[in-house]
Amino acid sequence: MKLASYYQNLNYPIDFIIIYIREAHASDGWKFDGDEFSFIRNHRNINERLDAIKTMVEMANITKNHNIHIYSDTMNDRANHLFRAWPERLYVLYDEKILYRSGPGPIGYSIPSLDYFLKKNIIVQN
Image (cartoon, rainbow, N blue to C red; front, side, top):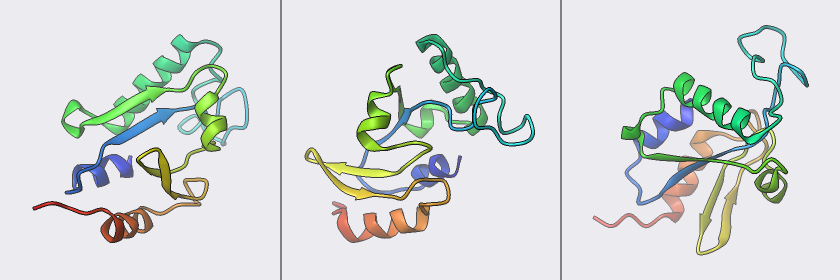
């Protein structure tokens, strides 16, 4: 996961949060060819969604050292609908306001664009 390694190298006073939403390329839905991309089926209950989060954490090698907080969306996809997050999106929130919203990912956003925004808009105290 490029974002996890990016966050690890950040020197900004920010919290990094992942909200896991419904599976983008479920094996029983809109899937890619090949099992290496589409091997998780659509979540039928919260336990299956939590299991998918565990798989993501393992595959992305996210450890407690990364200090990344990971949450699950509800089964009615509340966060997904609220933030128009599917298949994935980057946001910067501050004081209950959205300061930055990327295009839909992974093609519609870029980590360098996010980095540029943070460097221009986040005050780093030395």
